[in-house]
Length: 299
Image (cartoon, rainbow, N blue to C red; front, side, top):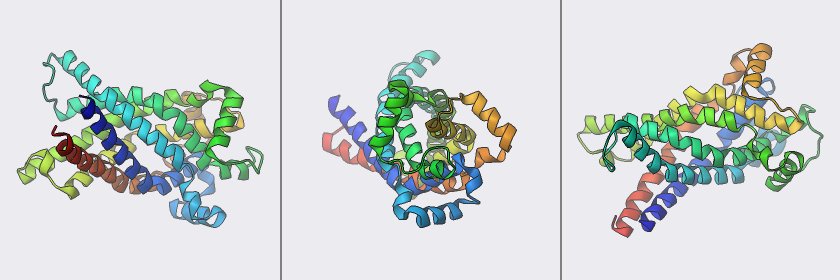
C-alpha cells in the first residue's frame, strides 16, 4: 500500500513539473494581463514588453512557487481524491472499490479540490505577486526598487499580515476550483472514453496523441468555465500587496462597474494556448510514470 501511494505521488510530481515548465511563460502573461489589463493590448505585445523590460527570464518569474504550488496541490489532490471517491460511492450506494463513471469521477475531483485549495492558495499568492511586481511598481501602487524574490515576498506577507496573509483569496480559490476540477477531470475522462470507443480499445491503450489531447481538452474546459473567477482571484492576491483588502464579491462588482465585463477575460488567449501543451504534458507524464511504476512495483 505504501508503495502504491509513493507511486501515485511521484507520477503527480512528474506531471506537475512538466506542466509548469511547459506553461509558465503563458501563465506569467495571463497574470499580468488579468491584474493590469490596460497596460497590454494583447498577449503578443505582453510577451514583447516583458522581453524588452526584464529579458526572457521575466517570462519565468514565479516559477519556483509555481512548481511548489503544483506539486503540493497534486499531492493533496491525490490523497483526497481516493477518499472523495469513497464518499461518492457511499452517497450513491455503491460498494467500495466499484468503478465509477466519468461523471462520478468528475464529482470526486471537484470535492477533492477543496482540500487542494488549502495547499495551493499560499504558493499561488507568492507566484502572482512575483509575476506582477513590475506592473505594481510601474503603476505606482508600490514603491519602486523592491526585491522581487520568493523570500522577499514571503517575508513581506508574513510581516504585514501574519500567517493568515498567505490565505488572501482562499474563498475565491475554492469557488474557482470546485467547478474547475469537475470540468477538468470530467473532460479528460469523457475525451478518453470517446477515443476508446472510436478506436475500439481500452482507455489505457488509446496512445500518446489522444491522451495528450484529452488532457488539453480537460484543461480547456476548466479555464473556459472558471476564467472570470481566476481573474478576480489574481486581482485580490496581487493588489492586496498595495494594502487593498477586498473580498470576492466587492472585487468582482468593482471590475464590472468600473471596467466592464471584458477585463474579466483579459489574458484568456495565452491561457488557452498554454492549456493544451501544459495539460497534455501533465497527463502524459502522469500516465507514463504510472505505467513505469506499476511494472516496477508489480501493481
